[in-house]
Image (cartoon, rainbow, N blue to C red; front, side):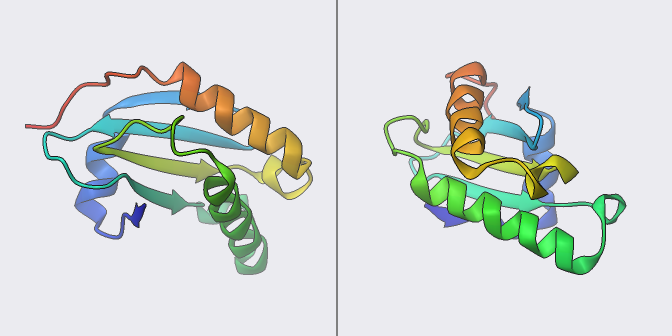
Amino acid sequence: MDRLRQRADFIAVASGARANKPAFVVQARRRDDDGPVRVGFTVTKKIGTATERNRIRRRLRELVKQVDSAVIEPSSDYVLVGRRAALERGFSVMLDDLHSAFDRVPRRSPTSK
């Protein structure tokens, strides 16, 4: 799994499918190439201080590491947008939320042009 780092990639994924959960939002976009799955993480300044935002981002990264690769659609981009509830929500509950979010995001989201 690779990381999304370019702003243009984040914007492209934002126009794809999405699944809302209490601690985060999962955005997804299927690509036309055969490259690896790419995942990006974002937490806005409205959420809290830099320390809180970094803690949320670390928790989201660890969640993605724990997910089975069979759940994730190959040749896709995903962005996890952190919410404030990610600070207090239990890790196992968030992991279950992530699994259900990947199930809710359409397996064949619109492709990029």
